[in-house]
Length: 282
Image (cartoon, rainbow, N blue to C red; front, side, top):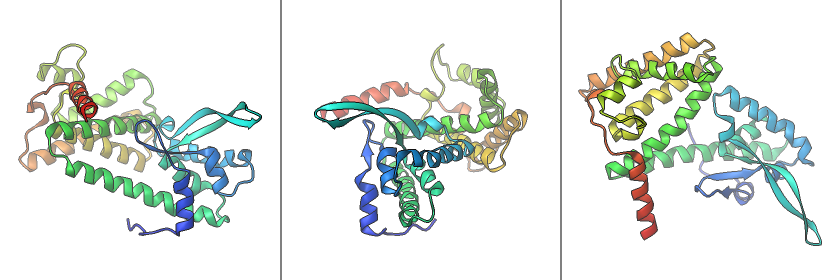
């Protein structure tokens, strides 16, 4: 994807001006702010656009709540009085979907489409650069484990479209991915093979190499299920197995260690606590 280097400064700064950052350091936008920037006269006229964007989000297999968060905001109405109004916290992706569904006759909408496409691509490049800059195994594990959390949620959303709704269905679906990647082993077998105790999560005790293999399995399965618009549980399970098996085959071809033979490591929760302690000292 070729990314335009610059947007017209006035409009770029308009979208930047309303960008906010949450406690986790993530960007978000207020729907109340965005509708005005996009030239809608009233918020109620903007809601149908948001609903179309939500539908597009669902159809893409994303977890809706990760991108559209309904909130109540207190606003001043004069003389020190306040009242509650409804608002929506929007992720960068949510904003991108909104401007894709907004009135194309508004010039600012086309600029918004470019802006959010650019910002999304920039974030992808930043994340890649961030990983390449990591030096320690602990840093790599933290990065990959967080990425896997995000993509497992997205994978669950895509699987839901294939009818994988009940917890038992999702457990079976996940085991198909493990069976492909781990040479026929399901999660219980891996748990035993790694010497983990009851209650310990497999993903929390993986090193960076094993996490990377599982991340690739999850992202490629998500992409294939979306691309082929899979609507059948059995097909989704088989797809997950096939992708896992292909990842395993790739590891074998490059002479890598099979994931079931990689040692378990200390819990990622301990690593997270170490990082928090370091930040406190700083």
